Image (cartoon, rainbow, N blue to C red; front, side, top):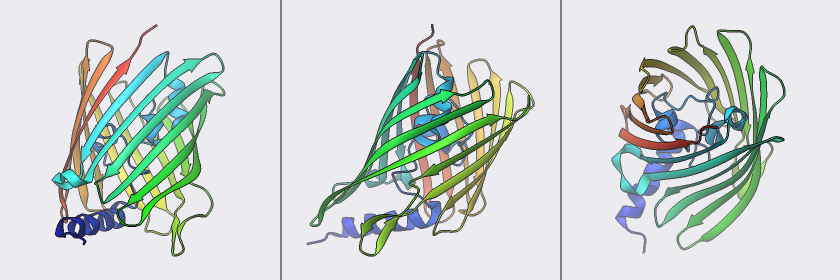
Length: 273
């Protein structure tokens, strides 16, 4: 028998997909991106394992990330994601795993990524994905897909990035396909302390979402972030703290006028050669 808890959570999941144009497969990363209203296709570093693998090419040696998000304050809509990456002479290899949902409905993603810098200004990356659905009284289903992206430094101030998730038609059920998702972003970085991101996010069968993110390095140890998405009527605030050169702690908070507030946390580690 389906409980009221299951009904409520199912409705929230469906509404979430409608508003954000994404599922747990494409919204990992916790506070890394929530502070920018999930704009992040231009961002490089270990968090690139979640949104644009091309950015992994900027990792100097080894890096790891653990992120947590509780959508709209519901424990049943918790999203946990983990990533690690290591740079080699032939490129950077990364691994990621994420889990979103609750006992009755859960989405899991496992990815193996590769990235490398083709030149001083161009990076490419891709990831092979295993996507797993778990639905009570129905069972589990595994899907296989891939994603790829690039980042291009146009000049000193501007960079362009693009990413595609799940190109082609992948059938989930007889009536449902896993939609292809495109993202295109432009970053303006007038100084080492400030940058602005504008990003177009389009899931093939949903309305395009436009996002704006802003970052300011207040001091060496602290960065503040702000983001907004007019389509989903949401805005966000976030911060990232440098804890002794190797460790970084991030927090973010997003507000949606229809569904409520979403908190997120992120902890990162970078080894320094």
